Length: 73
Image 1 (cartoon, rainbow, N blue to C red):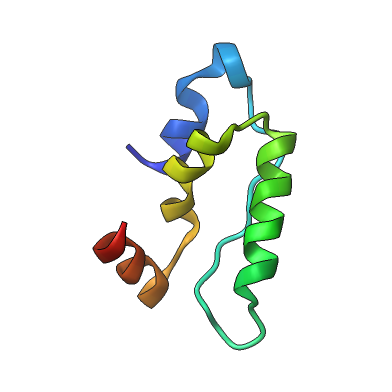
Image 2 (tube, rainbow, N blue to C red; image 1 turned 60 degrees about the vertical axis):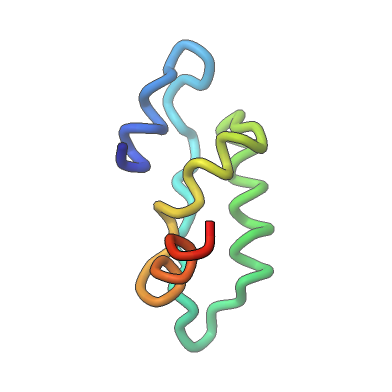
């Protein structure tokens, strides 16, 4: 299931997401702490709980960070 499919799969509880979280790929200028803080805030706006965030976080990771996540989740 893709991130978009997940976000729209339970419309009765969540409705349409109000905020689309930004992606993180550990490029120059990107900070992992800021990414996580923003993901949590965006999740709160979208009415996602902790289990929702854990399910979708991989969809917002790109490149080497995503590969590391897949190997270590």
